[in-house]
Image 1: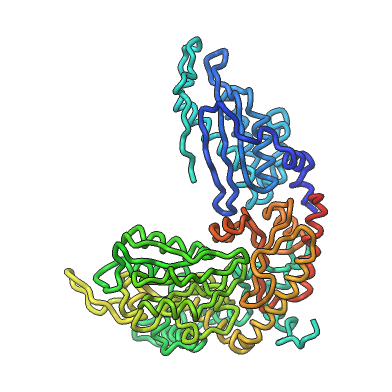
Image 2: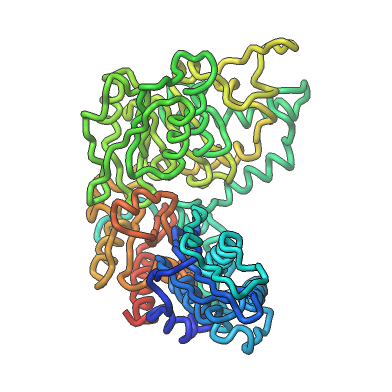
Length: 175
Length: 416
């Protein structure tokens, strides 16, 4: 029985008690993504802050969603992994997760990079469920890109207040 | 079940090679997803193979024997389908790619060309809230193109349609409803809705994708001007759909896809078109698919559509009872088999449909999960995604029991 491969205890724990669920203020970008084949949906917010070397850091990620255990747990694990990380490092984690999801169960995931997300290795054997596991990640990536382009986090002058009063905007997501 | 079975299901199952294969964990396949696509008996597969082995040619053209034979096979299936539906003539049967294309053909025709039926701002299109996206989105698009207004019959809490007569007005130009919901199995009062449509001079289209494969259908009884369905949900090959249309209604529509085979005279300046059904069938016909569909219609006719419907009703009654008694299972739609077909959609409290489907798959049970291309229906029922078991002539009562056991196992697995 491969069910336990897919539904590892870590996944079920995150599903029952998701981390960072519930939309929070403040935020720099908000997106709404759906999985059109099943109707699973996520609304996700990202807040960035300037890091010490001028690179934006993921200050907060919060989300609200409807969906299966895989999509819920994956979003929860993702928030744990990216919050507090510089954007470039978080994107590398996302790359590693994407690679794992495309591996059809053939890849030994790097636990140092993916931490709890290694539990999703079993999901990669089920093509129909990969989109579930990626829903929250793709929403986060989109929101982060929008926050970066909208908030000018890439400028080198880290001493200035880059989150001005009106710098926060809500970007339309893809429906 | 004490009643006498309408036919020997075990004998029928032997006609379907796929039903004897095993799936995950060497479990026998329990196929409860015929609402998505049905499986195929050997006679259908043989008909396609025989066509390619002995008769393959472009129908309706050429002067050689193979071309004649291909034409005979293709037109033979048209006649079989016409008889199956009680159509007045084979010319009322148009072959398309799918039920979806059939509906789009009509929706496009109501916004194009000089046809007197072309919709204008102020005209109204009437559908229902329980439609499959295939009988919803084309009408939204038609409204966008023409400035017509889209209206719909509301869905009642039990999944049935509230046939509100006040929605039918002199401005109503077409009424399009499902013949059987692909989610709840609800069969709307088609004749009544058709009479309402005709009372104001509107066209009446029935999306028969889930109706035609499972019940005896007479287009005259229903009063449909158009009936759309697909071959692959009724034992036929994937890729061939049907649009039945009353001849006058078809004749009044402009062509949809254009090109060869559907023309009368072509000059550089202009083209005239053949009468229906050829007018709607450009390109080289899909004769192999038609050969398969012809064999499927023969198979169903021999078994008897009354018997098919009776068998499915018995399975549905069993499923409603077996699933209904599981704590935490909510069945969407009517809880009796009255005016209801053999699809049973349900939710399991505390377990998302995807997860239910995954566990059942591990047990060899194939169902559909999600919104089944009927998002508004689900929203109205307060359901984000559901599970759907759909039955056909080859399903057994033991498979219904396997489904119920599988749901219990799922609950145990997720500890709900």
